[in-house]
Image (cartoon, rainbow, N blue to C red; front, side, top):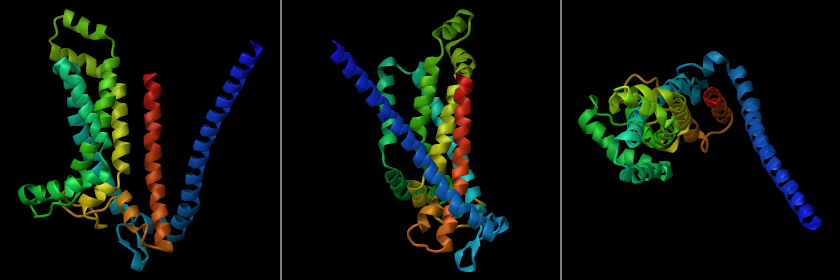
Length: 289
């Protein structure tokens, strides 16, 4: 009997050590990435000057590293993609919650979740072959299909699994007594869902929005294939522009010297955006708890 207890204690100690090592590895990886970005990126920004780095012109031949057009394009694409994804995803979640036959809820939810397993390059290929020509022929006023709108639609589709899944879980977590009590007071099913259940699940829905923003702002391959890639200030939804992630990916394997360091500095800006989103998500979870 003592041998069994000794074996169990040894096994527990071993597993605690393994889990602790995994946690340390995560912290070490994060520390290395932060050190790499800050040690290379911040000195470069200080050397070329903030006015140059956050300027409006990106021309490596003239040592102009202005990333403001990419920042604006990233914000436009992320904001519009989040709007498309939230409206569609939240509507889908509400429909699955109370307005869809119960036998159809699980199959539809699984089909939506399958969207998360589709590689981003497939989304980009679909956008390049189907969406961009459609926008160019039927919607664009200037005959250009590439741009902010094409990238936003593709990203809006890509964030749907996150929004639908998290929002539906948040709605399911609301006590059923809220729904039954509202109906008992004379409210209709639609009034109950939209004025009682959805506001009660707002913390989870906001968490879904934050996660979708993080997903959209960090996407690269699909965006590159449908946005065009010109480092200019966005002035239209139908204009070739470039996001921060696209800027890094398009030059990472071809540039050298200060140009590569400029991409690292671009990564610092992107890292700050991502850090802000993660902090926001943590605050939302703390408020929900």
